[in-house]
Length: 66
Image (cartoon, rainbow, N blue to C red; front, side, top):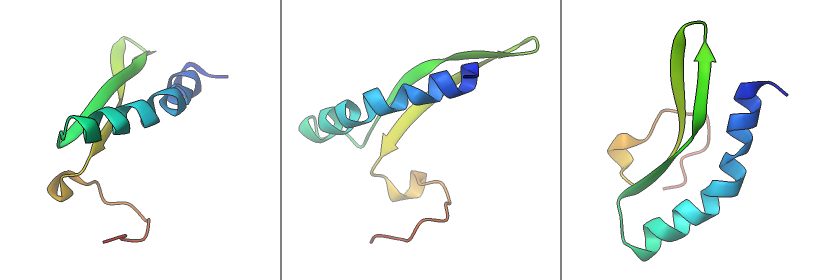
């Protein structure tokens, strides 16, 4: 498995905890670093962000649930 896939796979272990923490604390959003990747000489940080702020939503192809 590539490094990127390994980092992304850690989202599965983090998502429910982030949602629970966000709802219990009544936060607008919550995020965690999933890890870092080297792309040539550049370092990238992969993050998992959960938000309930509609203005922060990223366009996607999923059906609008609202």
